[in-house]
Length: 195
Image 1: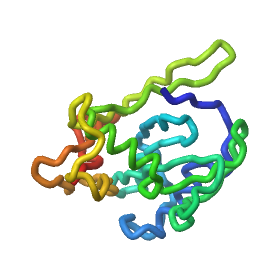
Image 2: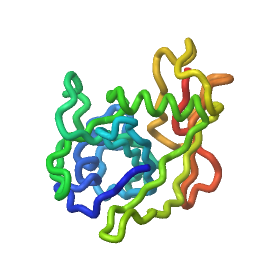
Image 3: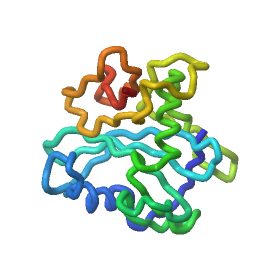
C-alpha cells in the first residue's frame, strides 16, 4: 500500500522529467516540452524508505515512454549518473529522484513482482479522516506465480525495462514479463521482462 501526501512539489515531477528526458539515449525526440502524464503505477519498498513510482508519459505527437523513478530522503551512494534531480516536498522535505533502473530497491521489487505474478500497489491519500483510496485505471501484472523463487539463472542480469511503448518490443521466448493496461489502452502492453 502506498500512502500519498497532498503536497506541493517544487519543481513538479513532470518539470523534472522535461529537463532530464532529452538527455536519455532511448528518448525518441530532442525535446520533452509539453510532456503529458498518461498513467502511473507504484510498487512498495518493503522497508518503507524508498518511494517507487513509474510514469507513462508522452510528448505531443510522440509515443508513450515509461519512466520508473525512485524517491529517497538522502542521496543514493554511487548513483550520481542516475540522478534525475531533486525536489522539495512540502511534507517530506528534500527528495532525491533517481532513474529507478539504477536503484537496487526498484530492481529487487520489479523482479519480485514479475516472478511472483504481482501487481501494482493500492494507493491511498492521507487525510484527516484517515487513508482514502485513490482510484486508478492503471493496472500491471507479472506473469510468474505466487511463491516463485526469488532469483534464478534467467534473471541474473536483472529485469529489462521497455522504455518506448510503441508495441515493437518483444521478450525472449518463455521470459517472464510485466504487462500493463491504462485508460485508453485496454489491451496489455509489455512493460518489462526477465531474461
